[in-house]
Length: 239
Image 1 (cartoon, helix red, strand yellow):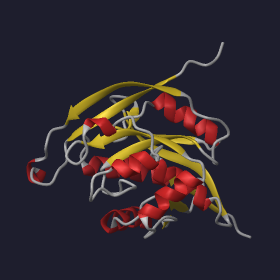
Image 2 (image 1 turned 135 degrees about the vertical axis):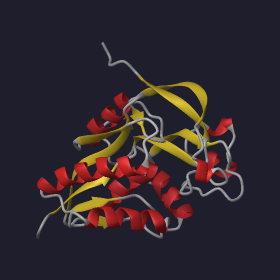
Image 3 (image 1 turned 90 degrees about the vertical axis):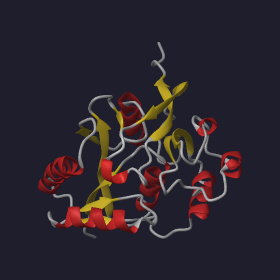
């Protein structure tokens, strides 16, 4: 059987983790790299707010090489696309033909990803595509994954959701209209244990911070710019 060499678009969150779990059950795929966008100014996973040190610990626990794409602060889309194309070209030179994504139902995002890859002759794979999100999050929990909420969109969720474990009580407390997988950007997470991990990624919860970002002139009515972040602090290694 021909091996399909791929990288996974890795956020450190539940959709990426469950996507990796699912693709490993698909015959023929080899996930050679985790690709994560990290803020160059803050050394944190973009949008999720997780420290780079925890991302690195997570990659070691999963035992897949981590490739970090550093993103400048307040980067525009053109610059982001250029940086991504350089990274994709490097993967292409290493004979990676596929990119794996945890997207579920955002059609515009899927189209964007496919167009970016097409220029280099690469293909996108979406193991979770069009799955029922209520069923997905329940399966995620049933399989033994553990995750904590690191970022919530303040427009739709209040501060109390930041730092919570994803479990039955969390799902029960979500307001009506909030996707249980946060597929519309309602919340983001960090997975620290589960069947893809060799060991638990240990951390302690720090302070909850509210951050507001500048609004683009042409997006003022649509752009979400206020978020609550729960800072996760890596625990020092045992002496």
